[in-house]
Image (cartoon, rainbow, N blue to C red; front, side, top):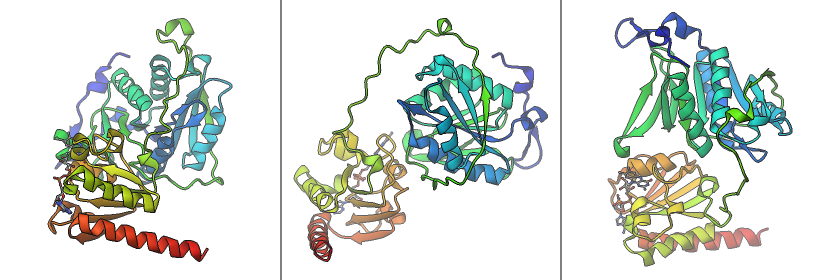
Length: 366
Ligand SMILES: Cc1cc2nc3c(=O)[nH]c(=O)nc-3n(C[C@H](O)[C@H](O)[C@H](O)COP(=O)(O)OP(=O)(O)OC[C@H]3O[C@@H](n4cnc5c(N)ncnc54)[C@H](O)[C@@H]3O)c2cc1C
């Protein structure tokens, strides 16, 4: 698509920090979420984004839509119906044989054609392999702004724009980015950053069908076979209900065993900070934070962890955070729900023993 002079037009200033939207930008309305699926399963991040999209749409007083692309034979209509259960008012469905598997070219064409025709003001995608690949090419094709890996989404009350917050300068700061002059405003969000909305099967909506108009010979990429990622034996941190994490304050690898002991008693996963992973006390798959996993457990126990922003962005969505640190001024106490000031090497074995006894009593009581 070529950029029209209209799209380049600069916004008119309307007082302090306020921008009046150009007329052509006002034509863009509504919030869309890309419903990502693979091998017949929708990625849960799509439902998380619909939950967040619902809140944004209600603030703006606009509709929320899902976008499903796929081929006949895939349960695409069921995906549309599911999108209603998670908050969408309607769902755009593009079906074509070339959309049987994810490939950048046909999915980019499908999404950009839809955007050019129906003009949403906000388009959200998961920061997954597929979502990142698609978001980049859609944003460059449409010549619009994309904020990647957001940790928070809001509506700017000054201009009704999307205020997309993400870590910056190596994670030492959080910045909020607003796409003022271009539409749609695009953002990607990692799985588990947003909470999963309730699935409400009483909700319904309308499916808007759209054709693709692309043939196989136009597409350079071919899918030869599908080889599943063998992750069964790897830690599943993002989906764990309880995580016990250790940091540099555990001092040495032998002490890190105390984290494992408590995790075992609680049936929890073990997490770690980056210095711990770099020291080789835990595998990379256990790193929580900006350059590791984002987690959202019911309980997160952090021992010997300072609470640096790069760690915090990966775990602050936990329902309950318990911090154990011998420094009462450690930053983690600013956002932990419960804090224990003391030596982790003394406190962890005590907690492990108490939980062991309590669980034994509970089991006996049936
Ligand atoms: C680009 C970039 C990306 C990054 N990504 C990540 C990431 O994904 N995840 C991540 O974790 N970090 C990440 N980091 C590193 C991050 O900045 C911090 O350095 C790191 O989180 C600190 O880890 P820590 O809390 O284990 O160590 P420290 O900051 O050294 O904290 C150790 C804590 O242990 C406490 N302590 C010491 N002794 C005891 C004791 N006996 N009992 C109890 N407490 C004790 C201390 O008071 C201190 O608060 C990243 C950094 C950059 C620049």
